[in-house]
Image 1 (cartoon, rainbow, N blue to C red):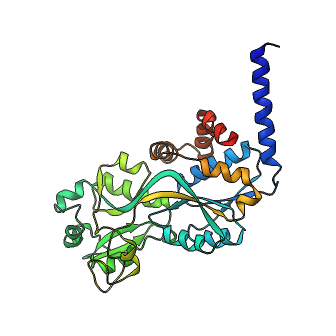
Image 2 (tube, rainbow, N blue to C red):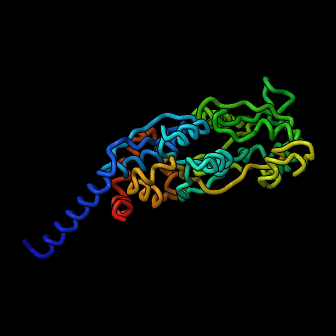
Image 3 (cartoon, rainbow, N blue to C red):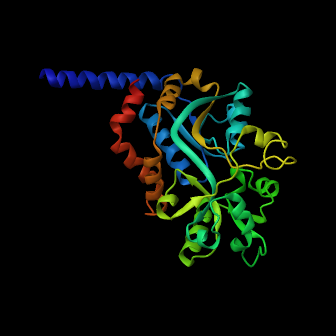
Length: 314
């Protein structure tokens, strides 16, 4: 056997022994939560696939975005791959404050979740993206069901976001209509865009929508934690949530016992990073091109083997 082949064999043997070392910590399944939007499903299944490559037993559990924290606190669930600074930070801080959940760090994804309108609506409401202009021309966004109030299409109720509270606090003159699913939300956008119908809705990044459709996010008063917690802070001295949504990282959260029970897996989770660009592209492949989530994940695993292999080896 040549020196090169011997070296390659040794590297493979070391990699295998490393994988086995991870695997023997516990054969109990690591339970990862699944939600109801494509990016989260992709993110979670990539992480699950990497853990499986490292020898771990993985189980996926469908869970509500906010209610999942009860399972993470109790140890019935072990890992949540997408806690958005925009909508989940309060729940995350509450959970980590209990001592039963840990923040495993950033995913590398940077989140925006806010009211968004297609650019053709700016012609009908020239003061946009200013929120006061939106309030003053709310009727331009009305439908037969909501007139004279405007219609705002929010995300599924389980996503949180305080849109109903924001409308009341800022006296927006809008009726909040929550989409039942992520798919329904963007079907509303597609339908309105094709007909140039009035619409303002919840759009988030990373996602393909801001690349496919020309539009802008509404500019609300700047977010602060106090705006959410103290009614005296903000433009309305009597009500909280009189500001925009926070922006920032998308976090990974884990049951506090994960690091002790599966230390190798915990380290892999901590090292794991994706970018907004690659996530938006994958979501577009799934949602626009109709490629199955599992196929999107498998393609990423094949294209990024060196990358995730390094996370396993560390």
